[in-house]
Length: 500
Image 1: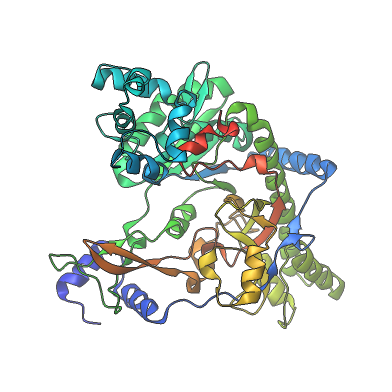
Image 2: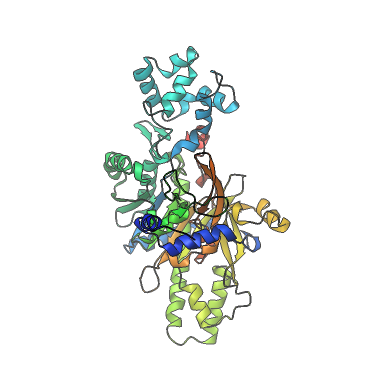
């Protein structure tokens, strides 16, 4: 690889080592191996479906855990721009026709008054056009309405982060997803009256995000009787990956400099690693519901957290026994726990004290999974690991060999999928934080085709945050109701009953 002195300086400025760049360029050449699958997870095979009695007991376990003054943080990846939400409306503004024509456009304009941002849009239309939304539509000027939603001189929704859009209407005003996450934090993650919420935000939106949080947090803290501790971080430049040409050499900008791209959500394992907490909830910015539907979400968040702390307690107990001189009966009991409760099958590994210690002393996560209703996302699978064991993983379609009929059948007929609903235990039995990047399976990244300035390039995504980045964690899946999963991928999703 021929890197100039200037290249090496550019690499060093990002906090990346030359070895990492060499590895990445090598990965472009070799690609990433597909994962070897055992089966799709299902209820009774890797997915737990708790009974009402068990749910109450898990909620109680979580309440007791919090009462000990443990530090709990709600971690919200919020750096995504909302531009993709408005793809259809950008297309309408640029379309050769002036009236709503596609089903999507018709729905948007027919139900425009049901959007939580309608009043704000109406006000900005009056300011910029001298007429409100209804008047503009009556005279056939639909494009002015859409442009005022999207463009900078209007609401600027085409450029803002998703967390800053008005999602839900209330009698006292409308709320953004950022506010809804603060409310959730108060309802299930507050410990000793303090709710810690951490947002990962892109650099260009950081000031605006902080300003909005400062405006809204005090009123919500008062309303819910908690004290908020809100923190922020950005994806680190050191987690960016180098772009390559189709022949796997470094892609260069017009001025000859190297092109780097964000490494995807897997880069956030570094941000997660810096969170000081015993337990961390992870949930995407756009998966929120209005207050009327929150009780179910709040109950189930506590259920999965209760499952987590009970499993962790047992693992800690066993690790302390392993520090002494465990009997064969105790080792057998631990082996049963690892295989049945943590769903990690040895598959030819010798199950001795060393093996048990390795599988018990690592980060742990419990993931809510919902019944598959055809939404895009990762599925829960039993997968072979680097060490030959089989354990539960969340897989994206890009990690599966589409030429393998058996695997594709598992993927398409999977009963459940994971909507990024995780609760994580990140300290060991001695109270020390795990070093999370040590548990990433580096062979689970993937390569996609992109373009820049009309030139084709290859982009490298790091192992995803809830995929390969958490590959070597203990993982347990719990079936949660579909009502706890309400993502907003397009603006019209906000018209679904759950968001009204």
